[in-house]
Amino acid sequence: MLVIAVCGRFAYADRIGDLTAMLSSSSDKTRLSAVVSLAKLGDKRALKPLVTALHDPNAQVRALAATGLGKLGHKAALPELQHVATDDTDDTVRTRAREAAMQVAKANHIAADMPGEEPAQARAHTSGFGRSPHAVEDKPDLYVLIKGANDDSPGKADKTTRKANADILKAAILDQLKTAPQVTMTADVAQRWGLDARHIDLSVVKLEVVQSGGYVEMQTELRLAISDDTGKMLSFLSGGAKVQVPKSKFNLNALPMMRRDALEGAMRGMFDKLLAHLRQTSQS
Image 1 (tube, rainbow, N blue to C red):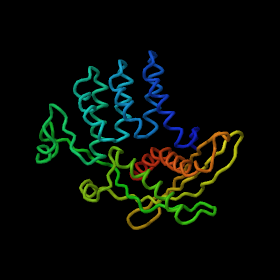
Image 2: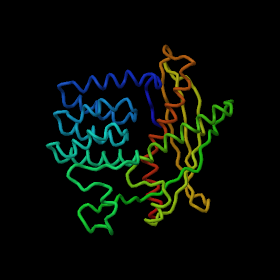
Image 3: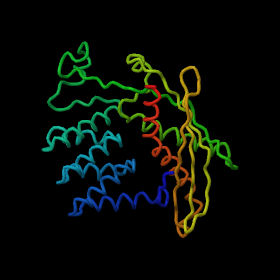
Image 4: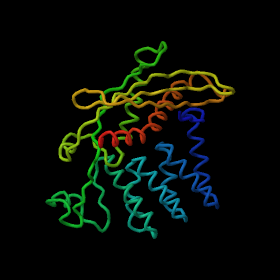
């Protein structure tokens, strides 16, 4: 169970502000901690501080910032990532920036021409694989499709609210799939590499508000059903998250934001586990 000990989404702005301030610390450890936390938030408001961290005096901070920007997938980071990928003095930072630039480009369906390389358009006309230094292809190893999403949690939520919850969950996993390395959602690409589709059916099985000590919690649990092209059920995965709000700061207007944070947090917490599970079952 992933615990998001913040006051819902409305607390993220303060959190990002605090982490941004930490990037000005003279302590390498403090700046490392800040950039790791910013990268994990998955919030587009972390874009500017992560771009700033690309120029930190500590190479490890710069590398982590590049990785975070790659996962964030915002195209505004692409020019700076391309610059760092060629001009940074550290080999690891250049590598991480290059990888991040490719992730961002893939997420936004744009070419990521790196300075000093043959343009992507020219590479696309290179016949064969490996026949030139630039004929490098991004070979996927998973073909993933989202079959559907539903809010099947107990309770009296109306159809509109349940659909909104399902849409939040579906958008959360699609955003992560678009930026995940070696994952495709395109049939032609999958056919080219001989990949069998794995269909994911998302379900909210719990979404409720409870009181715990001095906090009000929004608790959620998800169930992911995995099937093949024939509809045969292959396996299931489950996981959850909870968002905690101090009772003194809780109000009913915060409930929609808390639901969103809990659903998105649960999906983020399960995503790496899902990919590892899909790769394991595909090879068995």
